[in-house]
Image 1 (spheres, rainbow over the protein chains, first blue to last red):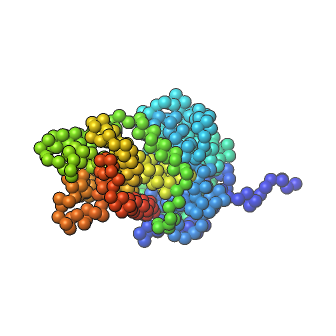
Image 2: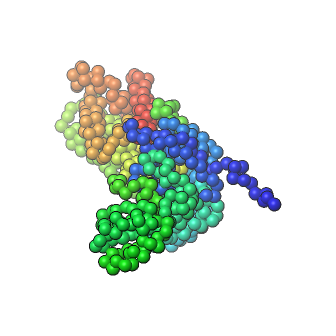
Image 3: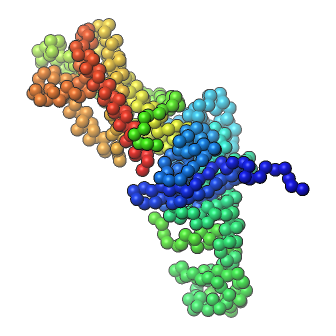
Length: 314
Length: 259
């Protein structure tokens, strides 16, 4: 029996980006990018530095005008009606951009007014939002007294002041320690469970893997791959990775193709062997005491490095 | 987002203006002192100190002559300072504008709020000097009240001009050029410290189209209790700089944010 659930095609996407092109001084930052984000989905934009992630976010928010292409945010054409669309959007910028002259609670109050909310409505939200951000005790603290993780959590609380339908986060955990990072992930998962739509940029693979339902890997402004994290790993790369180093690694690498390794990559003093059937390669490694190796399942980082290369992007 | 589009601010600029006011209120004392002490010292020191050595200037005691110039100059300086250093801090250094633009606000809203706030800061300074002039008995004319709209226009005018330079700035250093190469020479060419009639004719012609000259030409007769001659022309100059400056500031700021 078919369920009477509305199909995905009936609910319009929260964000729709079509054939987007944006150049700065002749350099294409975003190149024919198209994607859609469905309601309730966590969508990740993944890419090396300078891949066009932040530019894509700015275009989606209507802060930049595209050279070509169309953007629809919450049903409104952007940038034409961006001011209207942003009333139901929350943004966590990379730089936090908190008001250093205000306390924690004042930051929320002042920001809520930009949405045309009444002081009473904002004040009613401040308590629960600070609890959510684990900043209840910091209500009257000055911004300078907050740690990096606290500032980021406050920025997330600020982005939620208007109870947005969609939340944009630009590298939400960059520069934070592991404890702070895990707390942010926990909170973002809560928001996803509440049904909020999330679009985030990141270059942390574990972040993308933990949070995102769907990922777009972009490089040089172009879409390279788009799927769920698991599907990307399944589709784009061999399931087993063996990292081999130690004396004789080069010699082993020359024999590895014959041992069932489909793809070999030498990075510095380490060989990365990617295979579907790792047994013969592992057996040969066990016989060579001098070689040290690590056998692990392929992960998103392997996919990312395969698709975007290992060259540094400074 | 045509760079040259007609400005389309919304009423949402009001909470932004309120934000600037709330921050100012927190830091009010040092900022009030800074804005007012300097022109006040100039007025008292030059007015009485230098005035004692001078015969009448423009037909009145030097401090009476200087009072109107001080009002206009302090308005100009305070509005310019706010539109340059403070606006640049909010735009570039502490990224207040970035969070504003993530809210349902356009760049036009943000710039209009900066413009009005810088003009208001200019008014604070100008009005303080008017009060001092009244307290010192420099002028007790009821027409001093008519200087208030001149102060407001002067503030709006220089706030707009300042925001043009703000839109072009890469750092704070850029602003010292504006102060030393534009504003300071203008005070000497606009009849703040001595009558424009003392300048060579070609400089007088140049002085005639400067916004500070227009402001001083309106304020000085009012301080003396007279209606200013050529008021319409001076008003037109101030308004032209203000409107033209605001539009140019918007275009330049849009260009900066489109890059």
